[in-house]
Structures are given as structure tokens and as C-alpha cells.
Length: 93
Image (cartoon, rainbow, N blue to C red; front, top):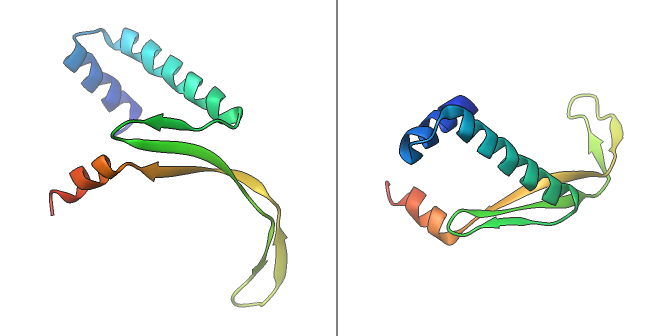
């Protein structure tokens, strides 16, 4: 599902215009991004939690040439699914 499909789906379910839903999703994502930029985590009950973690610098080795290179530290986004989401996904097996 892409952004356009999500907006259409929400607009139909909530009986809103697509432009209203577009504004809502844009504001929602802006709030989420600003929280993550501040180093805070975001949790959605029955869905999961997003948090920014620091990945330390490490040495990488190219498999063919055996050349070593240093990968600098960086911040990455981590997602941990809730138990409820995990059960819903696995209930279709």
C-alpha cells in the first residue's frame, strides 16, 4: 500500500475528503518525525513502537578483495512489533 492508497482508504472509511485526509496524514507524520528527531520513541498500542538507536562505528571487510573499511556511526530507526500485531499476522497461517 502506498501513500495514495492509504489516503483513499481512510477517506472512504471516515467519510472525509481526500484533501482532509492528506492534511491529517501529513501532520501526523510531521509530529512523528519531530519526536524521533528529538530522540523520543513512538508507540502505538496494538501495533508497535519506533525508536531511534545509535549504531556504533564498525569495520567492514569486502568479501572478495578482503579490503577493510571503517563504517562511521549513525542513527537508525528501529521498529518492534507488538504482541497483538504479531498474533494477527500469524493467525492467517
